[in-house]
Image (cartoon, rainbow, N blue to C red; front, side):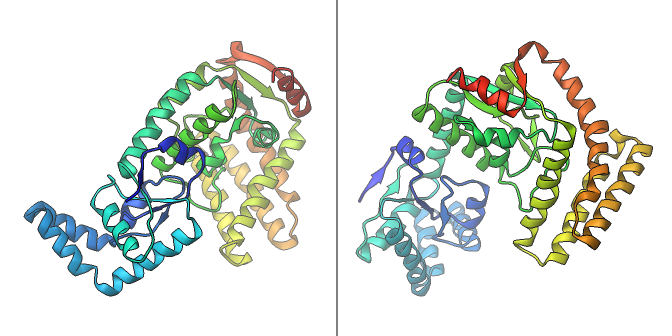
Length: 362
């Protein structure tokens, strides 16, 4: 029966994959956003694993056969067959490309479908991505887009070619108030996504890749150390944006878009309450750095903005709060950080000027 170890092609082509590992394994990390269609449930896997340790492989296989009844086998095989019909060019994988892959492949074969699995399984693919990430970081030139919080760096990246949006991969806007309405990926999936993005850049483009200047953490996720070290030495282009426009961007990103994200899951009333709680908690998290007086001032302004928004549907009431946070919290931090890397600045200007500057070097 067919197998493949062409990991590069699988990654570059976003080949559809389904993962027959148990859900608990899949949640920790997957490849190519693989769909989890497990051979065994978490409980079944645990029982079989304990049996394997205590009584060996034959006993474990026998127990697995007992736990996965004929009805369960039929249900799970049906799900695999449906995936294979929708994705005829795909693959299945387990952890090491061993027994679970072969059993899944055999059950599909018995139903008239020959579907390949990945040699070495998830473990080999993960090792490939880790190794390729290190090679990419070493070989791909990097230029950073820097600028004050709210200046529109992510918007600028979206208008450039040859970019990697680390915040998008992390599902977080990067600041203290940058949480989105959904959870961040696991650290393993974040690393897999970064490696995949760099790998595609290396094979489809040449030259520099543009990244947003980020701190070590994006939300709760840490950048790979080798990438952060390279970013610390990379040249940067500074995006300059007037304060009033930065406030506009902040309202759109941190209020309008976040509320809309919550509304995809909840009623407006619940979504608004989640928005309120999120920003009040984020403000509380920076209380020590703001100091008690400025924190109280900021809390009053935020509460005013939330009340105005709730009562009139207008977001204008947030402007005072956002201006205070930008000018008295984020900007001083940025000025200090910039002073430590000013010698690496290659250009500064507004969005149009930065795009024109970059276009000269394509």
